[in-house]
Length: 637
Image (cartoon, rainbow, N blue to C red; front, side, top):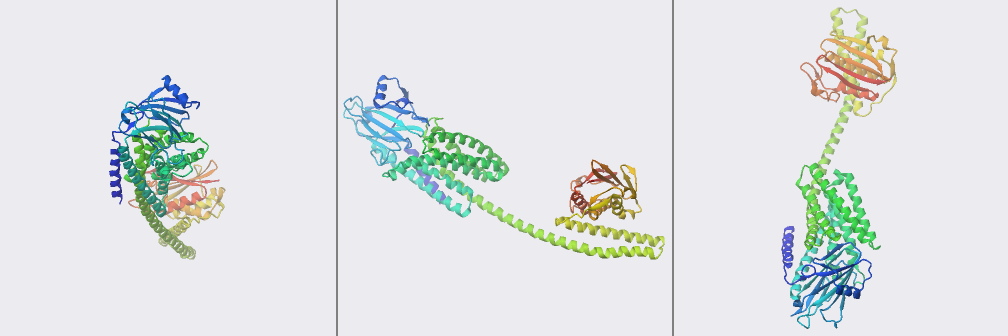
């Protein structure tokens, strides 16, 4: 369907362009020069202008009148040579439609007895304007009675819209052929515009895409094109209201505003550049607000503001396009979505430049501006549907990932519950084993060999208790249920209990210092702070156990200092250090860390780190060499 539509559109476009090759039309300004007078005070009347023509001091122009949004009254004078009126009547075509007041006076050249014929062709003129039922005012100019006489014309122009005036003289047969082709082309164009707009509306309801709603709003440009091409007055000739006049003004502002919306939605700026998105939508509302100036007679001022806004928006859009295209890895879809509004921006800005009088009038620019919206509507609609299906696939993928994550969270929750339950149940038999060993020490006096076995059993038991405590603490941390039961804790008792496991080792020696001086557990009991003793014991036990585990033989040094209103505890071992690639993930849960002789799964340091941070402290690795590591924890006084 789209291919056939484009094929017919192309064929009719060729007919349209071929219609521009007629030899008969004579254009005022291009083929026939005219004299121009600009009346800034609006004081000059018809007779006064005739006197100025006789004086011969007027400007001579050789291009169509195009001055932008200015307020003077313009007077034009020209003569069509007699050669055009020898054999038949001629037709005078006046364009464009949006000029408010156009008064045309004409009579045969040199016939002072002939009365001046006055005709009106302005946009606010009600009913059929001209002698033919056509979209533009067309006046029949009869052939002259004498073969040497031509026609003299005087035109008065006054408007609140932009000043553009083009008059052309046609032979009737060629005008009929031209107007038939033009009307057929434009009727097909507007029909295709209506279909594309209807398609955009239906898809916007179905897909619920902001981009498609923006395209629907931008379809107001077709109302502007229909008004400029005279369809409103042509189809409703008897309406007693200048509807076409107001529709032209309103649609010109609204369509430009919706083009801004299309551009921001096409680039998906709400996701990539939310501040720019709000900024450009603010400009869009500013342009729409200019509609309120129309009844006040300040439409031209509003349009001038729009021209400045458009220049700013075009620059922002151009920069944003390349940013988004880079962010989306130079996808072809993004290129097309950005290129389509950009073409409309360029075409619209060129037409604005003509309307504002920045550049001279050129009907080829209007052709580009007329083609750009239909191209933009069809292309963006197709691309919006493609993007919608792509986003739908991403949403389904996101929902699938969300479901899988939920399943994983539920599995993790049940795993934590299981680990917490098992760890809790392990504490009872471990406590019984520990108490039984203590009783065996008391009941009998074991020999050295049995005592060594008891120590191994005790060490293994304490190790299991420590692992159980880590599992319980990890379960509470994962469940966000790490509640602190704070009480006064003295350092001497805390360190003595935390290093109990290390004291069973015959290969290691514990060295306790306070502010760098050799000390003992009992000497540190005077130093205390508020904390959760049970959790801190787990944390310190993990750090000491980590030092023992990675030191085959040597000293484990614990140095406690008071500095800057903090307790600083440094635990130093004589191991081989931590591999450089493992330093960044040292305190992460379940990170596999191993060497040739030692295997570790990272739970102990992770638990210690979380417990210290829960006490508003910090834990970090401050030294890492092949001769040993130093871990430092800080707790507030």
